[in-house]
Image (cartoon, rainbow, N blue to C red):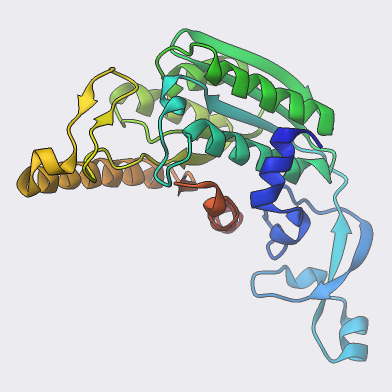
Length: 287
């Protein structure tokens, strides 16, 4: 594997198949007639898949597992703007966390030969990478995303990428959005509503490093302005800032929940697997 997929594998692991078991509507799982093997029943499984003869022999309820004959199309939609050059909550660069999230979805698709494509960019526009299969293709799209974030990116605007997808992708697919924590204005609401009317959407957000903590001044990559440290601001202003930030996150969570979009906020790379597991479980139950 290349460096980007290897890094994603370090945090996500290689057990993508096990992750997606346990639900009739699990992400990237579809029903077929090609029998694969047996596994123990877990709550939520389709009772039609119980192998009663094997269950009687073993004394344990066993489920038939099938090889999916349907290949899915997955579209990664990524913010590659200047916001990705900032620090995430855990202290890593946002682009490193974002690339590992994108790579994790690439790893999920590899064992199933699903087709995966990408749209990334910034406020200036979008780059489209067509759907293909395979490790080489996935590593290449991760590399192109990463290079964009390191070569003079413009301002971030995930709405630009979402509008492109809503306009140019007509056939239903699974859209995985990877961005920072966007502001929920009317423009974003309009394009997200267009998107969810046609596609299934998952949203993974790289959460921000707190701007007013500690003794060191911060830096807003979007505006170029210095953000005073918590020490300089004092306790009262720190409290006001933190309350405003929590209200902004609450609005964002409500925005996504109202639209039935499973989401995850990920602050560092070692959170990727548990947060994606939780998000895909929500997606499975929603089916």
